[in-house]
Length: 271
Ligand SMILES: Nc1ncnc2c1ncn2[C@@H]1O[C@H](COP(=O)(O)OP(=O)(O)OP(=O)(O)O)[C@@H](O)[C@H]1O
Image 1 (cartoon, rainbow, N blue to C red):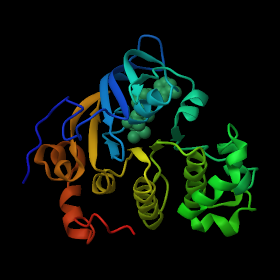
Image 2 (cartoon, rainbow, N blue to C red; image 1 turned 180 degrees about the vertical axis):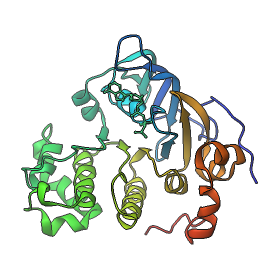
Image 3 (spheres, rainbow, N blue to C red; image 1 turned 90 degrees about the vertical axis):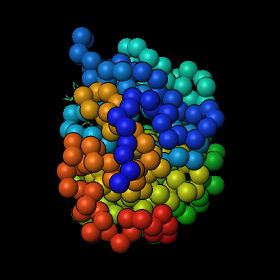
Image 4 (cartoon, rainbow, N blue to C red; image 1 turned 60 degrees about the vertical axis):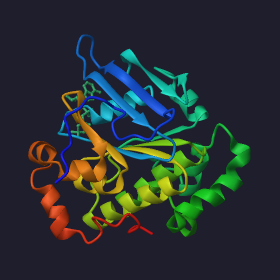
């Protein structure tokens, strides 16, 4: 078994060079005097798929919101390609190339799929036709259904629309908050495969997941958060087999992966 040393070094196992996105030692929270993130760091390099896992309440979604300016960063810094974007407004971040897909309420239910996708490109409507073609290439299931109202779709389909909308602006980075939440196992698998497909299309991805097992299978590297701080980090498959990580955060899941999943060691299993 590979042993992963407990570390707070966010660069551990990361490629060389300047990160695309860098969250450096963030403190952040919702209520005055209550810090949810307590010195939390993350790096995302171009082309990477990076996962964030950890127990309930660890601050995973809060970290994503801090990256997207939705929760106020009290100390520390977020940079995108070296430029400081700490506490920048969401519309500015979208313009700079960051897409964010919240866990819930992530579509306009009264609008059609196509109108939802238009909303994703409201800052650059002239590019709609070209981007629609690209995005429907990634989500071919949506094409024939584009005139349906998003509110009439299943949870998995709505998740697809939410991802597609975030991709309309051609982001370099997409932040996904628990995209598999509430979906059946089959739909969850589809969501993970779709995430890989988006990443392979050239979009760098940060994904927060409750389904730690599947997340570690698909990501290049992952961060285990605990109580608002970095507990472990490293390549996904190393973390999956680290005895400490298994004991503290994955329970018996790592052995379940070995037993249950024929794709556990197949990097190309999604396409
Ligand atoms: N809008 C909010 N206002 C105040 N506290 C919040 C808010 N959202 C989250 N919290 C608190 O922040 C802490 C971390 O929540 P967060 O959702 O980031 O955790 P998580 O790791 O994503 O957990 P889960 O996997 O259960 O979603 C929790 O104690 C939660 O109660």
